[in-house]
Image (cartoon, rainbow over all chains, first blue to last red; front, side, top):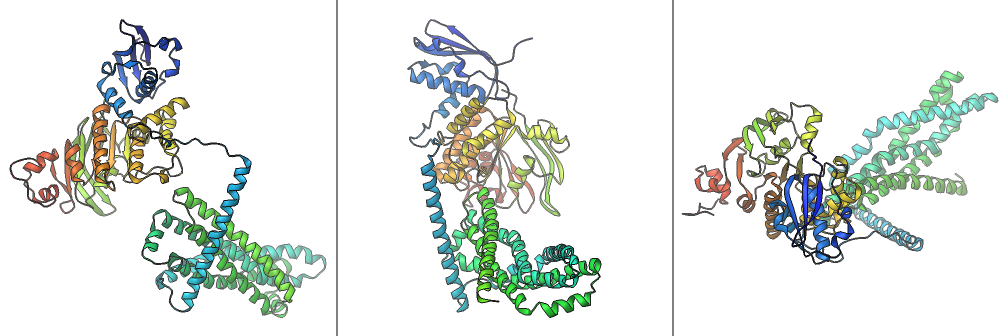
Length: 376
Length: 257
């Protein structure tokens, strides 16, 4: 059986070395490496190097990388390569491969950074991020200013579309989550309150919890994952496609045109969703009370009416408006900050959600402290 | 070198849902030829290319690669055939989160058993062929459009394909870069012996590289002319073809373009 693997044989001729190439030199199988040539081959350097390709059955780039490396070595050592002894295609490819020499300074070596440099870079990056955020908040403030004076440039249909996407379309998930949260609150509370025979206070617990905290908080977290991420992905993709640049070169502020409708949409829908979530949560609590604690719907709602005054609902609703601003701001900011690649869009969406949730929790803590201080 | 396979299209009808784009297409791409698919914007050139590379399934008709029907064979066979194709997309379609070197190395790592060092050498060699020596570590977003196209070509050639497909290779390039790319395509055909299928409406490219061609018309919804582009320019009697090939100027009298 003839051997089809790629091989070379070194022959010493009268004018110098001759390399006999045989077999299939294909990248789809193993090919010899130039490093496997014996060191003695080039010392002392022969006058010239030629090839015998009569037994070469087929070749592709596998042969070419061998030849390119060989020619490079020969050039360094001033050995003449008789390229005419190679197949015609290989000669042309060799010429092409050496046609455009590497320009100085294009090659990059990835060096490990010392710790100090890393800390420095992170600090500079954080500073730049902070500046970007301030600029964005400032621009958004100006855009709101011109909106209040009736001079903002954006399309009403955009606002309408965003209202729909951030409102009715989110109803199902808000219903599901807030009812379940209400049920969980009631369930956890029921076990404790039963010990004291104070089952009826389950209504106070669920009502207060949903109205003041959980309604607003859960809606905000749902909207951060749902709508905030969508804002970042939309604006990020527009950044990749240079659509944001197209707005800028038309002297249309992307903040007015893109951010304002989204911000307004969330500011309007979040409090509404929050009210809806409050009631759904309370309803969830009612279901658990009725089935587990034998508290009738009437008793339950009577108790809530008596002991959960409207101000708790108002605090929750005001909070949710603030959360709406935060989620929209984080989503749009990360979207506009996005780089120009596919992975940058993914990063923008992720960081929009993370930023939103962090901001929501921090804001909630602050509002709670403020409420304590002013005594509401 | 492995024998280059030819490609033929039989009675192909392409449609998006109910909307027929082109119908009754019949042609054969000869081995080692540069085959041009031309026609005005929106006539279905790129759609035809998407059918030929196996991205879209024909509404009717067959696409034969080396005698094997691309859509009647098993998915494994189809993948085997497709892995011997190279495709250069309109804007390069380089994976933006990988460097140029990684873009070219990926198919090599997937389809060959070469050690890492030889893959690196192959990557450098392919980049040198398209005039991008030393750009291994750059990301696609850091280089110009023309360079991205050439890097896309290097990636398309990574596995020494039997058939190379080009979608609008000169779109978005300046005349000199576009000319250099044409030269490069010719050089590669001559040295690699690959079959090349090009979709373009760039007149300069059509005449400088095309061995054979078909002309698609959006109204007739089929091929209205075929043959070597230079011959078409001289002999076609169809005003639509002449208008296209002469940019609606008069046909030059007594000579070739």
